[in-house]
Length: 484
Image (cartoon, rainbow, N blue to C red):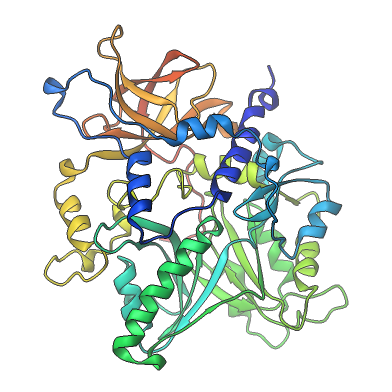
């Protein structure tokens, strides 16, 4: 069987995830949401191995719902369109609902697997304009960000970024993951997930209003950058595609040379349009991405230039031997191979950063319980200090050949094959295109089963398939970093 046929169900899975993320949710601060997520995503803690009972444990309630949802395109709700929607249709995209938007899943020129491998070997362009771009400024910007995230944003140099999380007050649960960029001393740009738009905006509004009530209306200015498109150029040829397009007139070579723009940094640069003129607005070019490959996320301001997003996209796709469009299917399999989380599946408010194997985002200088002021600090810092207190951990699994372990599949202890004990649940899983179709999965397992090399089983199609805990990522990241 070809790898394309083997991975056909992976495309269906992405569509199902799209529909799940498009479903309405309760508000962030509600007790109902916390209760729903707790029951849906947390596996109850168990005793040490020698004392563990064989009684079944709670698993993801979303399993049944996911089985019922096969195709995201079944949604009849009104969908938003990105500024590149017409281009996607012209390029033969199969469109599906995702986070309230009509988004490309795959394109007619390449299958999911072919697009995935093209990204690993050349460069792919993803439309990520559905993501929410924010601008936060004012004398209170640092203090606010240090309350709602565990990051030392005050230590960031201008035009540098960090991966972070918005944290729920009290619990330390992950409201959303985000990338925060410090632009100037008290000005920040950050991007949050499209699927969490409603919840994030309610959360941020409440936090900002509370801060302003104490420090004055002028202490913070917050804007959603609705007039910006966002595209991600990813792959080993990304720099060679983008560099010739940088407009160099009236700019220093140090600024326009992308070889000195390293992972986690950004610059505002113009591109050169086909008539030789610069883009009317500078683009914010950040060296980052969601695939594990080298690449850039490019924020395109379109105020006064409504066609700029399409013009920039056409420029980036001009050499089809290097760069092509890619959709949600490839984006999902690429990020999973890179060990990156998908919100609503691998992370929710039911998980803290330490439980989600993201404890490293808690900056070292913010780990003193006496001075830590971020939301949920007491919970998060106690988990970092005592990892055994964490009920479940996010880990990677490799699963034996055969049908892949999909989201919602039950993870079991196979010490007694006749009576396998449920110890976890799969949150993301598919055959890895880069690893020849090997089955990989991201899972939450009870503490004690999380160590590398632990042999477990996964229930797939009513059969227990052998699996082993492994480190992530499965495909090593290739970020462009400064020379050592």
